[in-house]
Image (cartoon, rainbow, N blue to C red; front, side, top):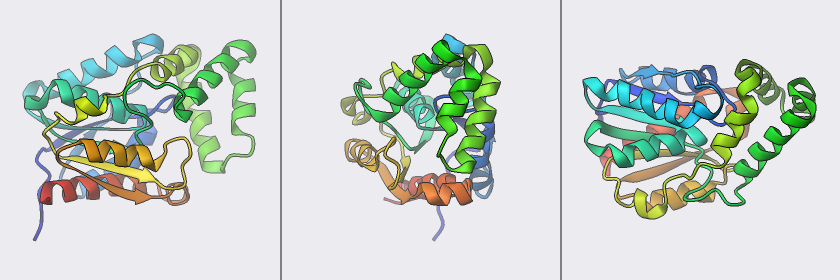
Length: 236
């Protein structure tokens, strides 16, 4: 038995400090395999990050219901938009959610705030040198490309994401669309426990686990996990 994804378009948002190139590398192929076209909005500049992305989702849904998705902070915004626009949302793909409700001391929020502070104190290149020391090569390359593309707006963008609430569990409990959630069990910045808390609150959700090690070898591994989780949520 096969299950069709209930929309022909998915708008996918990248995470904090990331860009549409990484979001596309993760999601475009796995979605295309099911006949779904991935739209990949570039990051709005600086503190326009949140309203700019939400406006892009509104515009994409003008012609009919869409899938929405994202990675980390992008998953938060996708779910936030879905909660407010259930009549225009066919489903959600949430990869690596980092918190629910207020960010508090969530590791991803703390890391973004620290990076923004370092950019303002030492500049972009010095921050990149410090932030990429000792991390896997693929991650260093992704950070270097994306952060340079953000340019002068990077610090404001990082802070906008770090301080923005994700949907609370009570809000997720009212989201009656299928939600596929991908988690990496070896990722301390995006704890897999958060993904499972989202899924437990949502009426129609599933989690598929992968690893950062797999993501380093194959960007699409994370997208495939989210799509498989969505198909599982549709089946269940």
